[in-house]
Length: 220
Image (cartoon, rainbow, N blue to C red; front, side, top):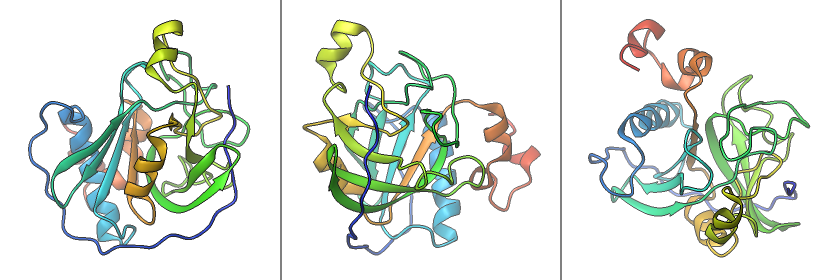
């Protein structure tokens, strides 16, 4: 229903502490998804990819009518935000089922991202994202995949249509909450977008950092 925005401006970076998160309860991501997100984050953190102790988890295996984005403060071990988030119109209707790294696919991408600059664009206050996984999401900047607010991402819209609005691949948020979420994660934090795609789960560098693939995927 809506496109993504462009035009960046820089924002500050903060120091990165070590990560260790307590067992999930209540409004936390599912345990198996959080485990993978932390594995990917820790790999990226060891490689110096992140400057902020924040991990955003998106679980695209859930329907869009459910809150499926979590912002986790890894320093305090708290969930700061639990929100609805859109997927691309090319990825599916109520459920996302297809993902792409290609321009004009209007699909969401999986994998590990790094947050970048904030700016004000077509959809207001927005956040640039950089995909860290070659062939999976590394065209995010080229595709103008950003985080922004969108009117159709709301519980009211979901109640009427059985799903929230869709983007052109951007993880769009509810308009009222988008600025607070963006301020929480901008400037060098991690976003982990999950779906049980077998090829990505087996081949992602960040899910098997320093670990043989066969051993790392055991039990997934």
